[in-house]
Image (cartoon, rainbow, N blue to C red; front, side, top):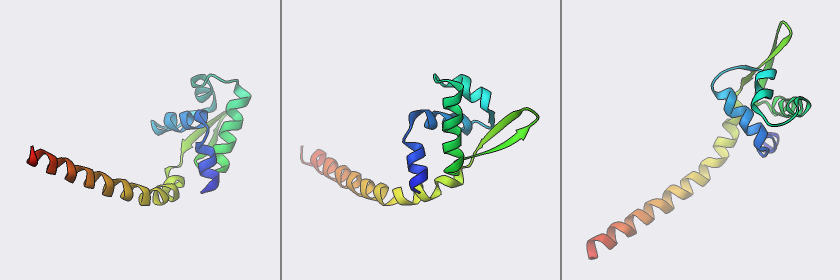
Length: 104
Protein backbone atom coordinates (compact mmCIF):
# COMPACT_ATOMS: atom_id res chain seq x y z
CA UNK A 1 0.00 0.00 0.00
CA UNK A 2 2.92 2.37 0.66
CA UNK A 3 3.96 2.31 -3.01
CA UNK A 4 0.41 3.17 -4.07
CA UNK A 5 0.18 6.06 -1.60
CA UNK A 6 3.58 7.38 -2.68
CA UNK A 7 2.50 7.19 -6.31
CA UNK A 8 -0.74 9.04 -5.50
CA UNK A 9 1.16 11.79 -3.68
CA UNK A 10 2.21 13.45 -6.94
CA UNK A 11 -0.37 15.65 -8.73
CA UNK A 12 0.91 14.72 -12.19
CA UNK A 13 0.44 11.03 -11.45
CA UNK A 14 -3.06 11.70 -10.14
CA UNK A 15 -3.78 13.54 -13.40
CA UNK A 16 -2.61 10.50 -15.37
CA UNK A 17 -4.93 8.25 -13.35
CA UNK A 18 -7.81 10.66 -13.92
CA UNK A 19 -7.17 10.58 -17.66
CA UNK A 20 -7.02 6.77 -17.64
CA UNK A 21 -10.40 6.54 -15.90
CA UNK A 22 -11.94 7.38 -19.28
CA UNK A 23 -10.10 4.50 -20.93
CA UNK A 24 -6.68 3.43 -22.19
CA UNK A 25 -4.34 6.05 -23.59
CA UNK A 26 -0.99 6.09 -25.30
CA UNK A 27 2.07 7.51 -23.60
CA UNK A 28 2.04 10.30 -26.19
CA UNK A 29 -1.56 11.22 -25.42
CA UNK A 30 -0.80 11.32 -21.72
CA UNK A 31 2.31 13.43 -22.31
CA UNK A 32 0.27 16.00 -24.26
CA UNK A 33 -2.10 16.37 -21.32
CA UNK A 34 0.64 17.17 -18.81
CA UNK A 35 2.68 20.37 -18.55
CA UNK A 36 5.98 18.50 -18.21
CA UNK A 37 8.58 17.14 -20.61
CA UNK A 38 8.15 13.68 -22.11
CA UNK A 39 10.98 12.09 -20.03
CA UNK A 40 9.20 13.29 -16.88
CA UNK A 41 5.96 11.70 -18.04
CA UNK A 42 7.82 8.45 -18.66
CA UNK A 43 9.17 8.51 -15.10
CA UNK A 44 5.68 9.10 -13.71
CA UNK A 45 4.29 6.24 -15.79
CA UNK A 46 7.06 3.96 -14.52
CA UNK A 47 6.20 4.82 -10.89
CA UNK A 48 2.51 4.15 -11.55
CA UNK A 49 3.35 0.86 -13.25
CA UNK A 50 5.65 -0.26 -10.42
CA UNK A 51 2.94 0.59 -7.87
CA UNK A 52 0.50 -1.58 -9.83
CA UNK A 53 -1.82 1.32 -10.68
CA UNK A 54 -1.43 1.03 -14.44
CA UNK A 55 -0.52 -1.66 -16.90
CA UNK A 56 1.08 -1.18 -20.27
CA UNK A 57 0.86 -3.07 -23.53
CA UNK A 58 2.71 -2.55 -26.76
CA UNK A 59 0.73 -1.79 -29.94
CA UNK A 60 3.13 -1.45 -32.83
CA UNK A 61 5.32 1.54 -31.90
CA UNK A 62 2.98 2.82 -29.19
CA UNK A 63 2.68 1.96 -25.52
CA UNK A 64 -0.90 1.90 -24.32
CA UNK A 65 -1.57 2.44 -20.61
CA UNK A 66 -4.63 1.17 -18.77
CA UNK A 67 -5.82 1.92 -15.25
CA UNK A 68 -5.74 -0.96 -12.75
CA UNK A 69 -8.34 0.14 -10.16
CA UNK A 70 -7.90 -3.07 -8.16
CA UNK A 71 -4.60 -1.62 -6.94
CA UNK A 72 -6.66 0.93 -5.00
CA UNK A 73 -8.67 -1.67 -3.06
CA UNK A 74 -6.20 -1.83 -0.16
CA UNK A 75 -6.19 1.97 0.15
CA UNK A 76 -9.99 1.99 -0.01
CA UNK A 77 -10.17 -0.61 2.76
CA UNK A 78 -7.76 1.40 4.90
CA UNK A 79 -9.80 4.57 4.40
CA UNK A 80 -13.06 2.88 5.40
CA UNK A 81 -12.34 3.31 9.13
CA UNK A 82 -11.92 7.04 8.55
CA UNK A 83 -15.10 7.22 6.50
CA UNK A 84 -16.97 5.46 9.32
CA UNK A 85 -15.57 7.98 11.82
CA UNK A 86 -16.77 10.89 9.70
CA UNK A 87 -20.18 9.29 9.10
CA UNK A 88 -20.59 8.94 12.88
CA UNK A 89 -19.55 12.56 13.47
CA UNK A 90 -21.78 13.90 10.70
CA UNK A 91 -24.72 11.86 12.01
CA UNK A 92 -24.13 13.37 15.46
CA UNK A 93 -23.99 16.86 13.95
CA UNK A 94 -27.22 16.22 12.07
CA UNK A 95 -28.87 15.12 15.31
CA UNK A 96 -27.71 18.29 17.12
CA UNK A 97 -28.94 20.48 14.27
CA UNK A 98 -32.31 18.74 14.32
CA UNK A 99 -32.56 19.25 18.10
CA UNK A 100 -31.74 22.93 17.70
CA UNK A 101 -34.48 23.41 15.13
CA UNK A 102 -37.06 21.83 17.43
CA UNK A 103 -36.19 24.10 20.38
CA UNK A 104 -36.36 27.37 18.45
